[in-house]
Length: 343
Ligand code: NAI
Image (tube, rainbow, N blue to C red; front, side, top):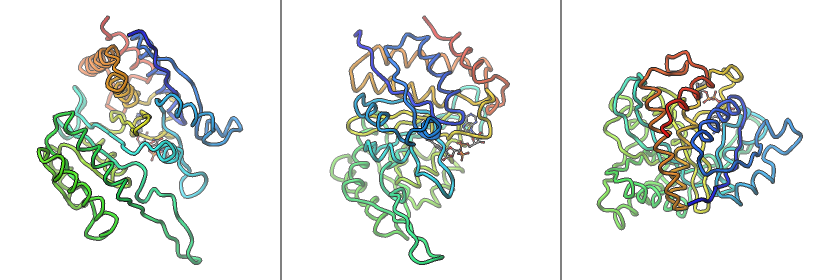
C-alpha cells in the first residue's frame, strides 16, 4: 500500500520537543508512510499568544484521527486545566492503554514483567467539577456513568481477547465509594459474565492490589482501573520496569487515537539532552501497529517490528540514557537506534 498517513504532531512542553525530535528522526529513518502535521498545545501554544488548546489543533486531530503527542505541563494547584484531560474528553478517547514490560538490559527489581494497564480516561474524579462550598470547604465531584463504565469494560475484554490475554484484574475502592466504584465493578462483572466467560475476572480493593503489585507483578495480566487509579498505578508500574522513560501509552476512542508516553514534561531535566526518548518511541510503535490494524496497512506493522528490534538491540548492546544508568544523551541514543535499524 502506498498511502501516507497524516499524523498530527504535538511536541509539548519541557522535554517534549527533545524526545519528539529524536522519535521523528527514527521514524524518518525507516521511511514509514507517515506525514507530519505540526501543531501546538499547552504552554508552547500560550507562548505564541494562542489559546492553551488551540481550535486548529483540536480540529486537526479530529480530522486526521491520529496524533503523536509530547507531554504538556499543567500548573499545580492553580491556572489552566490539563490539556491532556481536555483532549481525552473532547475527543472522547475513553481508553488509555499502557503496556508495561521488562526490557533487555534494563535493570529493575523484577524480570519478565508483562502487564497492560487499561484506564478509563474520561470520567471519575477528572470530571473537573470542583467548587468551594463555603470558605474553607472545597469539593470535587467523582462521576461514573453506566455507559462509560460498560464501554471501558467492553474495550478491555475485547483487547484481552484479541491479544490472547487470560485475566483482567479490576482495582477499585467499592467498599468506600459504593456507588461510583460499585458501578465500575458491577459493569466489568456483567460484561465478563455475559460476553467473555473465557477471560478470568479478578477484583481487588486497590490498596491491597498495590501491595500485591510491588510484591509480585507476575500475578497480574491486564489491570482495569477508573481514571485516577489508572493514572497513579501507571507510574507505580513504570517503577517496576525501569521508570517513566520506558512506558508508552495510547488514548483511544471510537474515531481516533492520541499516542503519548506516560511521563510528563520533566522540567527538572528539560533542555539538557538527557531525557529518554524511548517511551515516546514505543508509543510511536503502538501507533504504527494501530495503523496496521485500523487502516489495514501491513507496512506499518513491519516498520513497528524493525523499530522494536532496533531499540531492543541498542539496549542489549549497553546503549542507555542516564535514567537507565547509562551516559548517552537523547540525540546519541536516537542515533544508536537508527544505526541498528535493519534495511
Ligand atoms: P514527570 O513524569 O514529568 O517526571 C517525573 C520524574 O521522572 C522526573 O524526575 C523526571 O525527570 C523523570 N522523567 C520523566 N520522563 C523522563 C524521561 N523521558 N527520561 C528521563 N527521565 C524522565 O512528572 P512530574 O514532574 O510530576 O510532572 C511534570 C509536568 O508534566 C506537570 O506539569 C504534569 O502535569 C505534566 N504531566 C503531563 C503528562 C502528559 O502530558 N501526558 C503526564 C504526566 C505529567
